[in-house]
Length: 92
Image (cartoon, rainbow, N blue to C red; front, side, top):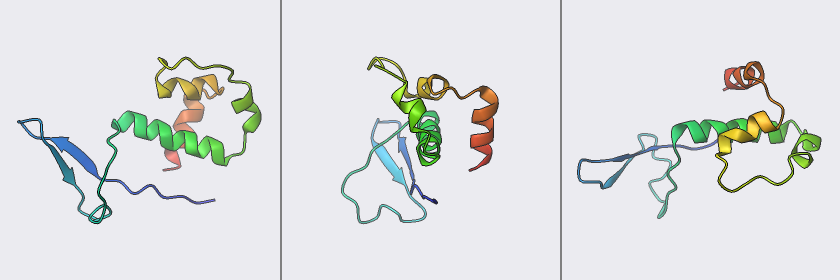
């Protein structure tokens, strides 16, 4: 199953104002945006790939995850090694 995540860059100028950099025009008609740190976005994309692989047994075995845990801790908790994550990254 293929998926696509439209993306743009949100940058802060020297006054702290946000500037949308969207050369593809994906968000020209949108009223609201969400900004996500780039390493978290990569993690989210990897998690989407893990969900698409239908490995629900791993997800059920996660148990309770503290809200204070960063999202990037999910991949190792799901049993992915550094090598597995590197393979997932190559899929982009």
